[in-house]
Length: 302
Ligand code: CP
Ligand code: NVA
Image (cartoon, rainbow, N blue to C red):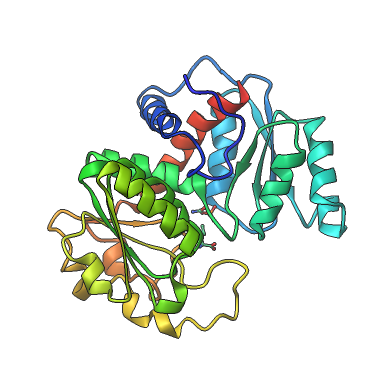
């Protein structure tokens, strides 16, 4: 069993560990634990931004494992009035067994990780969303099959969620086609890492500004908000041609699945007919966040 002590980004974790976490997710989903492996453990959960899925899946997951989660909004704790991230990490480490944090600047997650004496889990930053991508890799295996046989099309903004998908799917041999407006492409460093992973595994990574080219024959079509949290006021007009709607998704494989990390902005990046349609697996995808995070919590907090 591979040891690890935090979950800040997926690309720097050993591939064998990611594989183990996916397998443990499957086991936990099939056989929910009844023996309270995290009895009396406490997870501190820090939020600088809103959340529905991350918050509830971590709280319910900790509860299922016999432990507890403490909700710490940055509006309510001293972090919100100037206590440093480092001091917050040092103080929380004296009370809790692990820290999950959702932050604006990715650097805050790195600082928490550097100064905490307990494992830190990244619950989304402006750079990445590894909990989402871990659960999504599980969902694709569950719904579509082996990752090395999958073509995933990304539509929209190449930011945090896209980055984490690029950190996992090409590593397991998947073909990832990213369609974004030119000025919203994923970071070059992420694309470079993803291409190295793809070279090692037989996967592929392509970037295009043509959504139809990306969607052609895709097994998975994935989209996310055009305007992420913290970007309010951004001009989203460049994304108009990237909406997940039937006239575009008709180009995908007949059995494609539609995925969205959620929350969805119906009528913007996706229309009702797609998200509520027969190809959509978004609710299974949302449920799987909890199973994947329980696998992570058992490993990190036991
Ligand atoms: N996908 C996701 O992280 O959802 P929340 O913002 O609701 O946590
Ligand atoms: N890209 C979105 C993801 C939300 C889960 C955001 O950062 O708001």
